[in-house]
Amino acid sequence: MKRERVVVGLSGGVDSSVAALLERDAGHEVVGVFMKNWEGDEECRSREDLVDAAAVADVLGIELEAVNFAAEYRERVFASFLADYRAGRTPNPDVLCNSEIKFRAFLDHALALGADRIATGHYARVRRAGGRVELLKATDAGKDQSYFLHRLTQEQLAPVSFPVGELTKRRVREIARDAGLPTHAKRDSTGICFIGERPFREFLARYLPREPGPIVTPDGREVGVHQGLAYYTLGQRQGLGIGGARGAAEAPWFVAAKDPSRNALVVVQGHDHPMLHASGVDATDPHWIAGEAPRLPARYAAKTRYRMADAPCELAPRDGGLTAVFDTAQFAPTPGQYLVVYDGEVCLGGAEITGSGSGPSTVGERRTGQVAEMMAGGSSLLVP
Figure 1 (cartoon, rainbow, N blue to C red):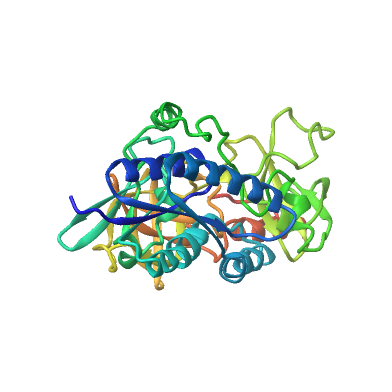
Figure 2 (cartoon, rainbow, N blue to C red):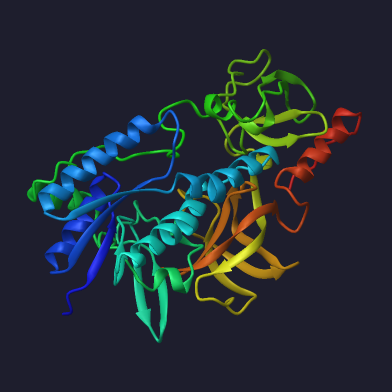
C-alpha cells in the first residue's frame, strides 16, 4: 500500500483521536490540524480542546497545526444561522459547517499542505465505485452522522476517509484507552460550538431582540407569554413556562405553530396532537451527492430530523424543489431543518424543509392561518 500523507482534523475529542491513530497505524504519514472556528466567550472550551488535541498528537508522535477559520465560519455559517432565525426558521448549522468549513476551508488547507487525503472522526462511510463516491451510513446506527454530511459534493468526498465509520462508539473508546490516548474517556461535545453550555435563548438574545407576545391555544385562549418567536421551534416542549395552566388537562405542551402577524406562539397538549404531525413535507434547494438527481418520482426513505428513524416515503419533484409524502405522519417537520433522503444505507442528499405537504410555504403556516381565523371569530380549526 502506498504511504499517503493524511491530514486529520483533530478536534480534541476521542473520535478524531482514534481516526488519527488508525491512519498512523495503517502506515501513513499523519499530520493533525486543529480548527478554531469561533472567537468569543466560548474560547475557553476551544483552548481546552486544543490542549487535548496537542496531547493526543504527542502520544501519536505526529505534527499538529492550529488554524483559525473563525472569519470563514462567521461569514459562511453564522450569518446564515442568524438570518434563518430572524425569518422564523430553525437552522441546522452543523450541516453548513461541514459543507463550508470542515470539507471546504479545511480541505483546501490540507491540500495546500500536500495531503493525499483528509480524515475526520465523523461516523459515516464512503464507497468508491464506477468513478463515483457514495456516502454511506455508519456501522453504529446510533452515532451515524450522514445526515449532517448530506450536502457534500463528489469533489469534497473524493479525498475523504472516515476511519471510525466502521466502528461502534464503544469500540472507539476501547481503542483509545488501549493506546493510552488522553481523550479515551472524554465526554462527547453536544450542541452548537459557538453556544457551548449556555442556555440557547440567552445566547440568541445577544443577536436577536426579545419580542414578547402571547402564547395561545388553537381556540385563541391565552395561556402564557413567550419571549420572542425566534426563540422557539416547532415541536418544542421544554422552556415554555406554561405547565399547570388553569383549566388545562395534565398533559405536556408543545409548540405547534407561529403566527407572526399577531406575534403569537400557538401551543397544543400531547405529543400525539394532530397539529404536531404532517404526512407530507415540501423542501427547497435540493442537493444530490452524486451530482445529479435520482429518477423521480420514486419511493425512498427519508428523515426530517437527525434523531428520527428513516421513514418510507414517495418522493417527487415540485416547483424546483421536492415533496415527500410519508407512509406515516412525521412529528413536527420544521422550516430550516433538512429532509435527508436514503436508498438503503446510501445517503443520496437532501433539501431544506419549507412546508408541510403541498400546502403553504412554511410548516405550520396553514395551521396558523386557521388559528388566526378562529381568533378573529372563525368557527373551527381544521388540521391535516
